[in-house]
Amino acid sequence: FRRRYAVEDDRSRRSAAATAERASRCSSMFQSGVPYHETGAFKTRRTFLPDDQYGVALDNLVKGCTDILLLSPDGQKVFTGKRCVQPQPDWWFMGGRMFPGETPVESGQRLLKRELGLEVEGSRFKVVCTQTFAFGMREQAPKEHGTTDAQFCYKVQLLDDEEVGKVVLDPNEYSASEWKLPGEILEGNYHPALKYAVGCLLAGKALEEMEECEKKGGSDEELARLTREFFKRRRQVDDVMGTSDQYTLDSPELNYECKVESKY
Image 1 (tube, rainbow, N blue to C red):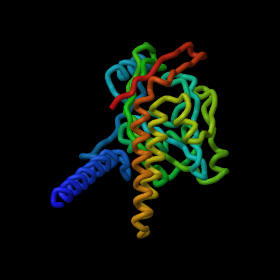
Image 2 (tube, rainbow, N blue to C red):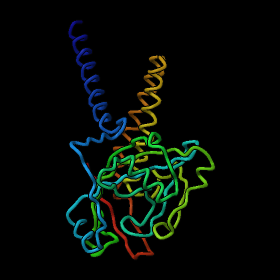
Image 3 (cartoon, rainbow, N blue to C red):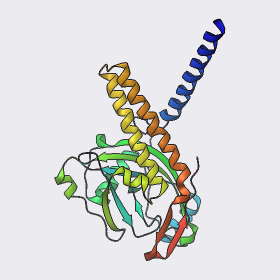
Image 4 (tube, rainbow, N blue to C red):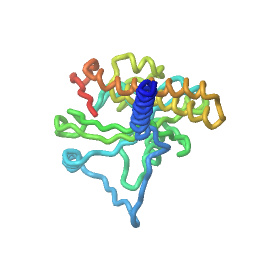
């Protein structure tokens, strides 16, 4: 009798430990924001670099980028643009590189205004995930040297149709744009980085629903159901990492084709 309870207690401890471990893995992803710490008085001294100097910088530095998953007013669709320039001449995020002294959100505000003509309050930026990239090609010579990025990914939900109507892409950088359901991206031939971010978007939504339920004093049964949904979505994010070999970047316009390798 005592042995049976000892075994059950051991199982319970192992289950609790496994849950805690999964939660600790999630907590690094679903932050309230990306902290910005300015130590001392920083003043940007950013200057324009000629292409040859910028190319040398790209060879030696990892760029910080703010990228955005733009959501429809009902939150059901994601706006994507099909890039026609290197790197990543395919469906991709909105965004670009950060400037010295900018927070990721300030960078996102500047980029949304530049790329889409949108002026968005900083409070509307919600963190989704972080990722790192290495691209085999870039737009600056020598193109085959490629470029490397560290990405801060956010979501921004548009408010209404009027705001949707303001979205205009630069035809020199994008050949097409579409509003896509998250499932279309997760199940289609899209870069694993885009899939990973969309997976995090859905997992984050499940986490928000779980937190809202707890805040309102929801039942244990409902909280348990939402917790299971969150962990299911979280596992699907990791599953994306095992599917990178299924994607092929194919750009007939640039006569460029390559594969992707994803890893933690």
